[in-house]
Image (cartoon, rainbow, N blue to C red; front, side, top):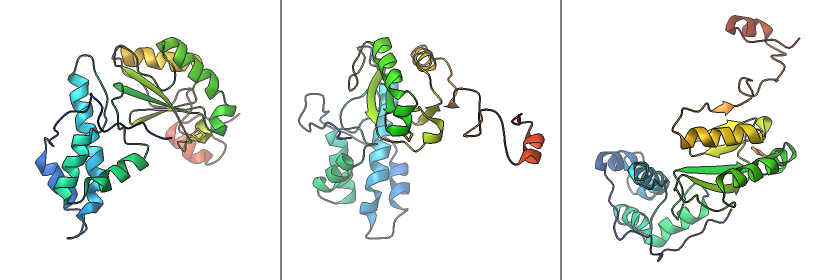
Length: 220
Ligand code: FES
């Protein structure tokens, strides 16, 4: 998915500074001398998480994204041209280059999820949140985007919200999840239909002795 990026937008802050200099040093020390530019990706991730921490305390809240000033600061720290950081940040979809909601709802709509009903779930999100895909709610809580396969097809349809996967969704379960997040209630990650990981919905069909030890239901 092509991420929107406007390095000169009005929302771009003039400055960015890492709060935790020790963590920056620790990340850079993972790489051999002279290869510090390899720290570009973890530093981009650190910047995005720092912005998310700030956003969680803001009113209205916002989620993690990477301002141009952060990319420039990473280039300064690593002593590389800023374009080298922009190249990486614009290539990988996990880096958000414009402000997003506190909860980034990444709905998988690739074939297995589509065949299992992701289209209905996207529609239910749009109706429930009052936004279209690609938009952010006025309260700053949710940004809804469609993404390609997130590698959890066996538990389709699924969504990634910030760092967490929610699987085996129905439209009702999905809107309930959104309500719980908006209300600050605890949510359960992973399968939402009661099964464990990607086991058969009817219960285990192999390794039955292990299932007995763990108290897991077996298929009848
Ligand atoms: S198609 Fe949705 S996780 Fe693979």
